[in-house]
Amino acid sequence: MRTRHERKVELISAEGEKQRALQAANRPPEAICGCTHHLAKHDKQGKCHEVVQTPTAWDGDKKPLSYEARPCNCQQYIGPRPLETLYAEDIVDLS
Ligand SMILES: [Zn+2]
Ligand SMILES: [Zn+2]
Image (cartoon, rainbow, N blue to C red; front, side, top):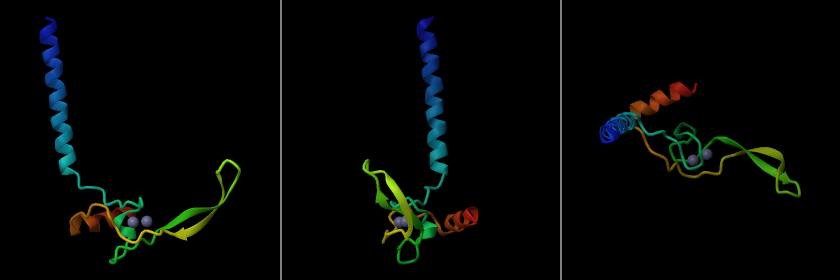
């Protein structure tokens, strides 16, 4: 009885693994750069144009006290590059 039950559990989890693998394969990779910004924020040269809040002052515990909006200093997009059509869809999603 015990063995049968364990076998069933094994089967179910194997089925779940297969589902997950299938879903992962169908999903296009997120076009997110190492700077955490989307591919759409990068120009054709790969430079990122997103604005980031950069700390400009810290307290004694190294906790930021104030922030300043600065352009992201990323010079090259390094994330996955989806197909051109998927890329266009992503831009629509963002707006
Ligand atoms: Zn970047
Ligand atoms: Zn960036």
